[in-house]
Image (tube, rainbow, N blue to C red; front, side, top):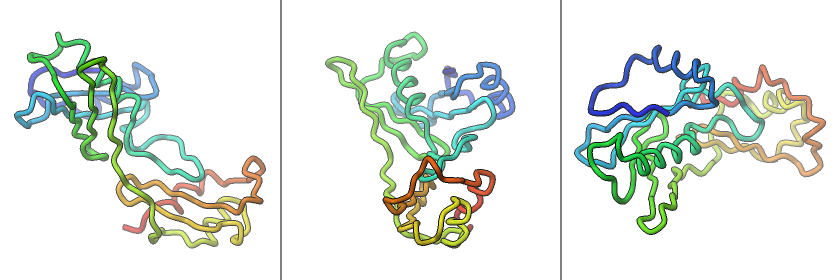
Length: 188
């Protein structure tokens, strides 16, 4: 995690990516003060060694890419709370992180014991249009169409929930992972 003091803008994305690649952790978090007047508001960005989150390099069948990194967000909160030397003023109450892809993330830090509670954005899945037909999705998952009971998507965080027939042996599925990304994308 890297905290940029003051109100300077982030360095160029290329430099942020180079630093994350050099660190070679699953995510590197970058924090800077947000332009608001609140001392508890920060901008937060996450980079993997290969690219900026949300574009994670891995996909799984029923949940597409989450557009946030909860572990790095909580770690960022802990650093801001417990290492006051990086800030010019003491933090009290909630920390608000402004992110590029996930909106505002709020971390409530208990004044009693320092317990942190993160408020994840609500984005329940619902039926919506995807680029792929149910037949294409079934083919990509290596299943007959009848084994896919329901498909729902989340517009904001862009994850996909695929309800499969209980008889499906997930371990035996032959998923075409190369074709998996395209069917799960939304028509734009």
